[in-house]
Length: 75
Image (tube, rainbow, N blue to C red; front, side, top):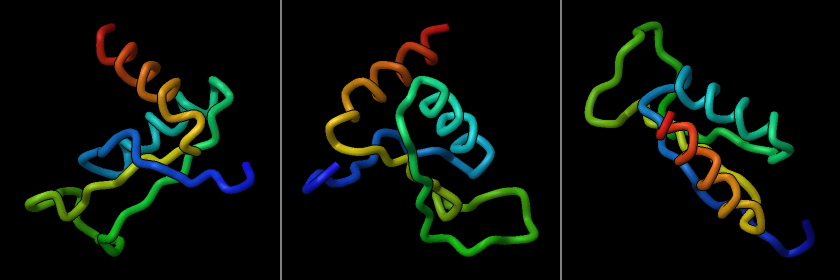
């Protein structure tokens, strides 16, 4: 990957949604990382985006990742 950086391609409302997107991307050969600023909680809900999880991929793969995510949304 060299000097490439990771960029956000999707913002999920929670970890479960983010894991689905991550799995879909990885099944298409796109490594993905999940990043969240919220600490784990015993509650299964979020308030004002506090549980938002960013799905990140290498910049060079971002366009393909976004196309795949948009394609899944159309189904």
